[in-house]
Length: 205
Ligand code: TYD
Image (tube, protein in one colour):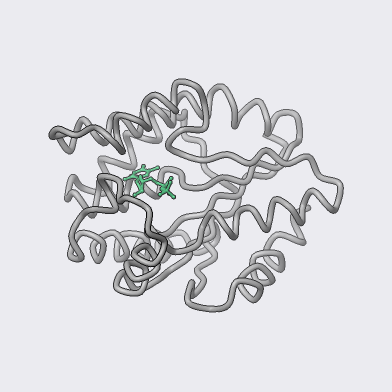
């Protein structure tokens, strides 16, 4: 792989999409070809899986949920991410396997190691060059989501305790891989965060 792959992670309401878009815009203005994508749902198959995993009304078993995210990821990496990196593009992506480890592994208590191994199998072991973790107190994140006035999806509707486990799951991942992760305080102003992200990426582009 010759391009650059940057993922954004964090709880719901942490501002990932905003920061990913700001980075993509800035890279574009420097002449790089940027592929802006997300999980779940970055491909046609992924969009169908996203609909099930986020909006199915009945019960979804925790293992089934983990497998749906892993299936989305397999398709996404094989058909979109790897080809883009092989062309030398920059892939800027909302969420990747760290989300599965945090939400399904820690949040649903399926076990971090197993969930990570499942995604590594699904993707042939592909890992991003840089992962930006936007860390935020779930109580603050919840207030942001409430202010947004959008209906909650299945995961957003989970309890405060669930989102606390997710947060801890992300921080544990970052501590285990300090070279890949950039951990930022998502309560900081948007432009300050964008500057810190750029500082990390500049030497790589
Ligand atoms: P996201 O697209 O960030 O939500 P939104 O469209 O509201 O910004 O993510 C959708 C939800 O899926 C989010 O609550 C986190 C969850 N998720 C997992 O539980 N596991 C995963 O592997 C991924 C990628 C997302």
